[in-house]
Structures are given as C-alpha cells and as structure tokens.
Amino acid sequence: QVQLVESGGGLVQVGGSLRLSCAASGHRFSFNSMGWYRQAPGKQRELVASITSGGSTLYADSVKGRFTISRDNAKNTVSLQMNSLKPEDTAVYYCNGKFVSNAYWGQGTQVTISS
Image (cartoon, rainbow, N blue to C red; front, side):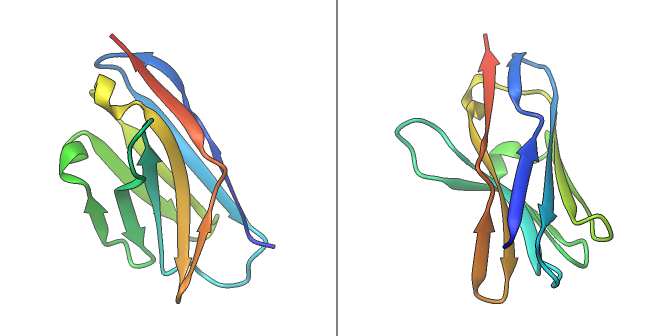
C-alpha cells in the first residue's frame, strides 16, 4: 500500500519560512512526478509546485521566487522550502505522487501564517 507522509507544517509569522517534507513508501515504482498542493478554507485544491523524476519543476505563479521544490529519488522524498510566507499561503498542504494514471495523496499538513 502506497503511503505519503507529510511533516513540517506549523504556525509562522508573515515573512517567515517553513520546510515541508514528504516521505513515500510501500511502492516499487518511481513516481513520474511528485508535488505539493494546497487547499485553503472555502477554496479548491490547487497545485503549488511539482517536480518530475528528471528534475523538471513547475510552480504556481503565486509562489514563484518564494518556494523551492526538491526531490530525492533514492530516498523517495520530496520537500518544499517556503520563504517569505504570506497570510494567503495559509492552507492545508498535501503531498502528491503520480505514476502513470494513478495519483497518491498524503493526509495533509496545516500551514498557518499569522500577521
């Protein structure tokens, strides 16, 4: 059974930084892509950043220049370094892994930015 487990969420002040990590287990394949999505109250889940097995990255416009995604294929982990955090970054952040047509999700970790 594939599991994605996030860690690193929490409460931070505006302008601060957080690092989210996600560890994948229970699979024998390499995810085509891994990434982070977020969902704020009353809003749809949205892509924050993704990274392919080859290292190509994609970022939402709202986080470009502030967030950095990285991946360790050997350790089956993906991380998201979040800097210059804003109140609008407050959301539950979900780790995601895609393999062929299948998508796998973590349970989510809360990130709250206080002003």
